[in-house]
Amino acid sequence: MDEIDISRAIIEDFTKNFIDSLFLDVAIVGAGPSGLMCGYKLAQSGHKVAVFERHLRAGGGMPGGGMMFNSIVIQKEVLRIFDELGIAVRKFNDNLYVASSIETVSALCYRAMKSGVKIFNLMSVEDVVIRENVICGIVINWSSVMWSKLHVDPLSIKSNFVVDATGHDAEICRIVERKIGQKLQTPTQTVAGEKSMWAEKGENQIIENTKEVYPGLFVCGMAANAVFGSPRMGAVFGGMFLSGEKAAEMIDKKLKQGGKCD
Ligand code: 48H
Image (tube, rainbow, N blue to C red; front, side, top):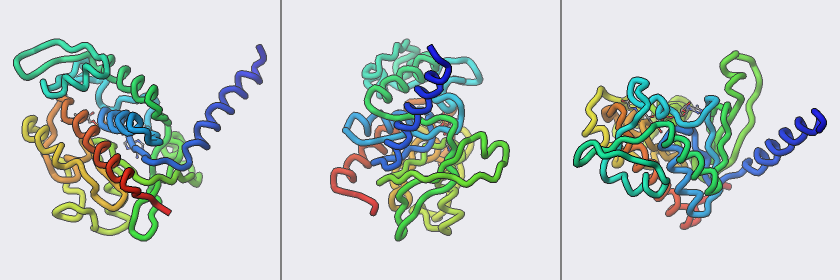
C-alpha cells in the first residue's frame, strides 16, 4: 500500500463524481430533511440529482432534535414515509410519533444515495446561473473559502431546476431577490421572512408554500415558510418530508414535460 495510491484513489473518485455532476436535472441546495427527501424522490424517478451542503455533515437542523434532545416528532400521516425509509418510530399519542433524529438522518442519507443522489458536503452555493429570466444552475465554492473570506472565484453547475432547501434563511431565494430585483412569484415579490412559532399553522402552510417561486427555482422545507411569511413549527418534522416530496413530484412532472435550460 502506497500513500500516493490512497491520494490518487480519493482524488480520482471525487473528481469523477464532480465532473459527472456538472450538468444535472436538479441541483438541490441544502442537505436538511426537505432537501434530502426531495433528492431521494427525484432520484427514485430516474432523475440526475445532486445535493450541495455547506457544512461537514448532512442533516441540517435534524440531528439536534429539539433543543439537543435528539428525538424528533412526526405526524401520523408521515408514517408511510418512515416505513418506506425503514426508520423505527414510537407512538406518543393518536397523532404524534417520535423517532431518533440520528437514525432518521442516517436512513435518509443512505436511501437517497442508494437511489442515486450525490451529496457534496463542504460546498456553499453563493449565486445562481440565469439565462433569459430562467434559473438554470448554481454557483459554488468551498465553504472554507467563504468562511475564511478568501478571494477565490467560484465554479458553476448547470441544471434544469434548482431547489432552495436552505432552511430558515431561504438563501437562494434571497440571492435571486437581491440580484434580479423583487420578482419572486410571491404576494410581495420578495422573501417575506418566517414568522414566530405556531406549530400547526406552520406545518399546514408548508405544503401550500412548496412551489416554483421563479422560473427554474423551487423552494421547499423551512425555506418555503420563510419565503411566504409562514410560522416556524419547532421540532416537528413531518412537514419537511412532505414538502420535499411535493417539490420532487412537481419537478418530476415538469421534467417529464421536457422542461430544460439551453
Ligand atoms: C449550501 C446551504 C446553504 C448554501 C444553507 O435547516 P435545514 O434542516 O432545512 P430544512 O428545511 O430541510 O429543515 C428545517 C428543519 O431542520 C428546521 O430547522 C425546523 C423544522 N425548524 C423549526 C423551528 O421552529 O426552528 O437544512 C438546510 C441546510 C443546512 O444543512 C445548511 O447548512 C444548508 O442547508 N445551507 N448549503 N449552500 N448557500 N445555505
